[in-house]
Image 1 (cartoon, rainbow, N blue to C red):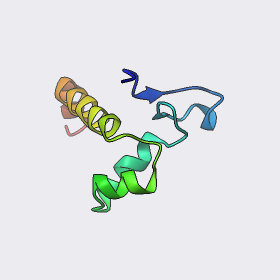
Image 2 (image 1 turned 90 degrees about the horizontal axis):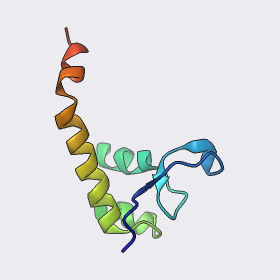
Image 3 (image 1 turned 135 degrees about the vertical axis):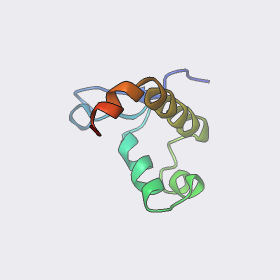
Length: 77
């Protein structure tokens, strides 16, 4: 399995972060989840994205939030 999950390339959608091997923006996943859609629905609509990629992006996001607590707290003071 390919280890890379996210690709940022100025030649692909102007450097928008996409799922590696696709032209599907990472933001689309969060847009789906925000509106209450399931991961399965997202995967059905974007067949080039693998479930493993989605899970890894969510894990990476969780780690980013956990390690950025100090930065995030500064925004609420």
